Length: 259
Length: 249
Image (tube, rainbow over the protein chains, first blue to last red):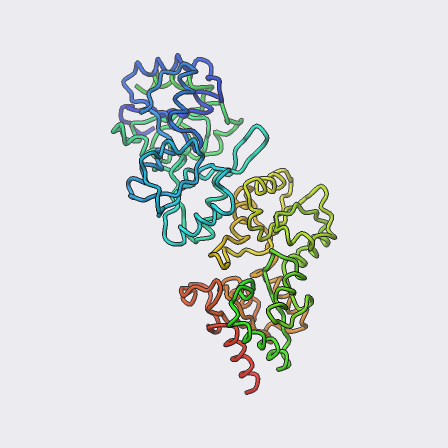
């Protein structure tokens, strides 16, 4: 293995890694405490398009995780950062809960389109509105391009199909801001001034968490909780730096071998 | 084709004569439409009210073509189409669907309906998606609107499959129109407003094709990287003029 710089940052996925719905992964609260005793910056990263940081924080605190709001970096944050950078006014096709994270961004007379998971905004009329804006030159920003996700009542379309449809309609390409895009991982580090080579990512989604992080130059640890399925680790090249049972074991490895 | 229906009356009198001119010159005429918001009957009645002398058996449209395919292959469709098109599928067995047929469903393209179609496909061992066209958008009186191709792409992406297209610009569609007229491609010319679906599709079959500068036409079409029309005309009347004059040379 090539010589690595000292580990300075740890990125931790939320859903499936620290908690599954409203239950914590056993031993995770204590493992997080142990990780905080090390000289590393920690960021909690997620592709949510439905929950604002406030919602996430509330859930995590109820599960007795010791986390601060500014340690959370979501795909919504990444989208907001991009809108501010480009100084555009978005048509926000995102879940009403998510609007909270776009407070302060002007939305009158939109000249950009942001698409997240928003069943109630994916009707024909809204899609036409988005289409006409993009045809007129508005950039299309996708929170992420998931094909589908699992709901209580079965599988349901994610934002990916709608983004793909609009790309086809307008002959343009969306800028995707969520995992597994490299920009997502780099943006997560921007606030803490660390480099990818100094960072390890822990997650349950082999392609989006581990693969994405490793493509960005980080180490990736795959945990066998959440959406993990047997042999997921064989699906990416290079394979995950480490595959282990769950978050507490990942923390143990970091404390024993990477510091 | 939808574009012609929405033109204001100052065009109608000119257009009314066009079909007659063409037929009077001994040319066979066929209307090739990707119209999937109405049955052929309704579509023809609409044009007849505008003064066109046209009958149902002069129209080649995707829905009847799709019904033939469904029958040949023993396919039972889950339909995601415009309410007005449903009668075209009356004779088709729709119980226990083993494929999805998608048309220009307009307001029926709700998240709920798309999700239902998606669930049918994702639950099939061999998912078959038949799309009545692959247009990106069309023009209505109140602006540009998304066409069936957009939602076809959405379902393709969601299920990681490729749709089968019945309708322009699929070769099969033009060939079936030519077969119905008993005419070789080299003996036929296509007139349309869609550079890719009308002009490109027809040329791929060996026909010549003219683009009219109406409907979904945009000036950049004349510099399209892949398709160069055999001619660009301001409207249907001009196209007919050229054709009829050529004949009488």
